[in-house]
Length: 214
Image (cartoon, helix red, strand yellow):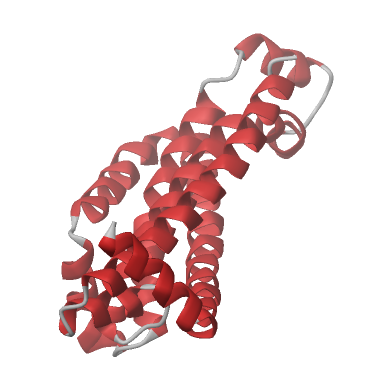
């Protein structure tokens, strides 16, 4: 109870500081999510349309996904320096894997009869992709977005170790000055952000899956 009380005291006394960290954390995560989402969607769509390239691309994504986040940040520092840029690049690399996988699975697991009917109506390959495949796979793709968002928000907590902003600053400061309440306060806010985004995206995912099955 003492720790919880100290956390709430910190939130009240340093409300402006924590609010700034939350906004910085959201901006950092959104930048990475936008980049990984776009790259993952394009790459996943490409390998779905060109299946022979799927194994090496998926293999590379799997390898990158297994590299510890702190190690990846350390590898990037000599190349990109310290600060938000390095954090965004690392978070983007991590976020690509769920997007590529879900986009590929979503586009390659559609009912072939529906696709054949679209071809029989004279639709081109691009028209089938844009008007049939992507809308029908939207629920599965959104599940990848959901995983990417939650993971990115969570992993962004270590961005402060390379001089980036966000709620990781509170965690890092709490560790360096031996203040458990400060560390817990930053961690709880990150968890709440991730859970809130997961809840909202979960509702959207169920809506698109239901719509795609109709």
